Image (cartoon, rainbow, N blue to C red):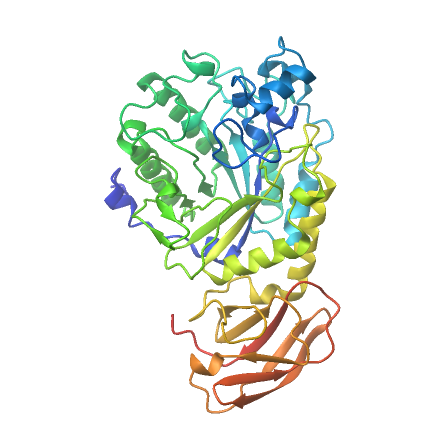
Length: 470
């Protein structure tokens, strides 16, 4: 008898595996034909009326009358050049999947999510369902399969995200740019949506992707209809049951259908309606407080997910901003799925690689305060003179100062923990742990600090013997 039935109630009994909660850091990779034109207006806003900062949306906006992308396309390539004409320049000629996997492992990522198929309908694997794919055209290589092998050789988890629910460019089907029933403006209201023929085609490819590569999670994006219309419950139940038979721990995000999708999340008010998925996925957004449900903040290092050659230094997160964002997310029960957008030849832009390596260097020193941790009673300390984020692991509390406090770090730990005396406290440094002197002063824990250690951006103090009441 199957363990999971194709109902939201049954699927809702699935538990998120510990590997996901322990990992904290994942790598998202947006790579495809759109990496050839590699352009989007840098001043655009997400969800804008006639433009998007996402370069992977080039195949939509290049056909949108009056859009900056259409104007750029016609000026740069001419009116006769179609999106499919870019495929021959999507070569991956300098791609080194082992090099990618080694980089991701070195920085401390626990899992990698490659765009198996983005909204342009161009699968990056050897699919039997369309000749319009990366093995038959362009790179003439199974990008999903090669990266899956390289990533798993490093001991990391792997998945290929699947965005076909909302394809705006799908050769072989009638409708705007080939997608049946496509409507601009986001997910549908649950009425109508892609026709049954397209739904069957979409799911056949997704099942093939699952069957061929056994992904460790399903990462859906932007559905067009409710689960029953898309047969989402059936696909997820089959995925869970297949994993159970293999004794494999897997996860599914909250974007399988319009009755599961994350836009029900109200980030500003720290609220979300009931969603179906093992974790929720705010995009370019975080929360102000600890979330009870697991979540994954997803964003690019720049404004775009796909490579945007128009983005400069100021369009990217600084090293400090990336590290601070990561620490904040982890303290509030989240993972960070940070995206890289490789060039069409398969190289990762140096500015993105530099940011990843800075995060990895910081984790080399402070990783014990991050990996396998859980949120503590509070995430932020509003009594400290320095911005602080807390994490907790196995009877140890970590206070991560987002700037160097100077001679003393004062924390409100006694207000949240029963302390008869000052606990043992150490500072994580590049050459090990350094013992510190701590005293209880009224309702504060005052920690005397040495000279600033030789790493930058955030500083983790280990406080032993503190229980987690959450």
